[in-house]
Amino acid sequence: MQIGELARQTGCEVETIRYYEREGLLPAPARSASGYRRYEPGHVEQLNFIRHCRSLGMSLADIRQLADYHQHPAPEPCDRVNALIDDQIRRVHSQIETLQQLEQQLLALRGRCHSPHTLADCGILKTLEDASSGEPCVCHPPATGKKIAG
Amino acid sequence: MQIGELARQTGCEVETIRYYEREGLLPAPARSASGYRRYEPGHVEQLNFIRHCRSLGMSLADIRQLADYHQHPAPEPCDRVNALIDDQIRRVHSQIETLQQLEQQLLALRGRCHSPHTLADCGILKTLEDASSGEPCVCHPPATGKKIAG
DNA sequence: GCTTGACCCTATAGTAGCTACAGGGTGTGC
DNA sequence: GCACACCCTGTAGCTACTATAGGGTCAAGC
Ligand SMILES: [Zn+2]
Ligand SMILES: [Zn+2]
Ligand SMILES: [Zn+2]
Ligand SMILES: [Zn+2]
Image (cartoon, rainbow over all chains, first blue to last red):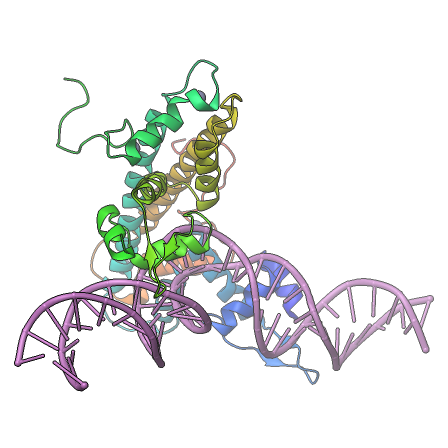
């Protein structure tokens, strides 16, 4: 199978396949006399493995690790696989929390502009401007552990 | 004021300041005889403006726009400012949703490995392997709108 | 006058994970 | 013999920085 067919079967771009090969994620296939890559059915599975892990947000480095564990299944405990997934879960969770804070900050800022007015009178711009001079802003309330109401 | 002092006052790295200048976000300051950048107090505010917007997750392109509106406050309505913030809110919100899905998928995958066992018997690796061959997996349930229970 | 050290300069490369060329070769059908 | 789809390598681009390398400047202290 040529690279285009592999791309079709996996839904992965041709350039991405070549990129994975360069990065050592996908083993280099045999070549035809004219230098074309010739893939075996096993490559479809390996590429699917990579794409599946990528769709879970894993880094290429982590996928390399996982693929290695997968291809050399030693009689060791699977602690490191778990640790890898747990780390990923932690990363995703902290990103969610960061983004949720960000959303609240943006909504607070957005709330400064209601009725129609000009750019010169816009509460959003005014808030950003004042904050640049060191004044407190709605989007960055002092983090003193206080509740919002009070 | 030299670049180091500006960095200290704004909590921004020296290299980042030079980068913003290259990118046209911060106006190029006057230079001393020996070529050192000499900043005015206004630069502190402009840099604070940029950093404040960055802390809200805005792209440099958006910040360029906002700074432009800010420095040339025309008597137009502020629709474009609002649109910019609204877009940013939408982006952040959709990222949150994506990450929340991801978290659920990762937790489902993680649930395949409980009691101690070897790499060869690990449910996580087995799930990833099976999915590479086209079998259904816990982390990517068919999106047919079905509820989980049923 | 000389050295030390903190500061400054430019230019370039690296990060993650692709994506998009440019500039060429190959293979098949008409 | 030509069109067209496919393949190849190598390089540059994307974001927002960060980190060097390799040098110049300036004030203080001996
Ligand atoms: Zn407004
Ligand atoms: Zn704020
Ligand atoms: Zn396990
Ligand atoms: Zn899955």
